[in-house]
Image 1 (tube, rainbow, N blue to C red):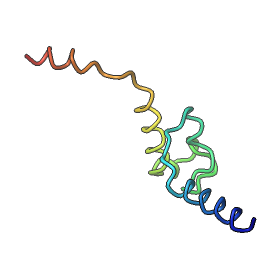
Image 2 (tube, helix red, strand yellow; image 1 turned 135 degrees about the vertical axis):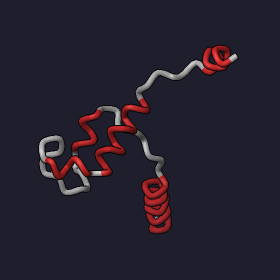
Image 3 (tube, rainbow, N blue to C red; image 1 turned 120 degrees about the horizontal axis):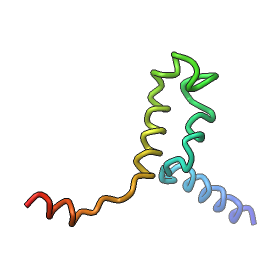
Image 4 (cartoon, rainbow, N blue to C red; image 1 turned 90 degrees about the vertical axis):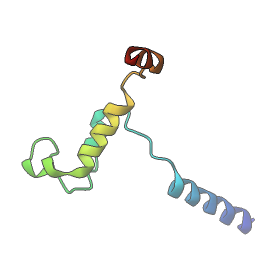
Length: 78
């Protein structure tokens, strides 16, 4: 029984450690628990230099763009 519990704990730890990053589903998620120490992200000037916010918002924007039609792009180049 103890071995089963330890195995489950190990598997859970591995899952959280190696879990793939998923982009935010909503841009508001970027402003929660900001690791830069900004109390009011988006309202304080010191938060403008926060690389986390820039990366998070860029990730959201990139993940919500429509896919490009590669065939159309290739045809227009010829």
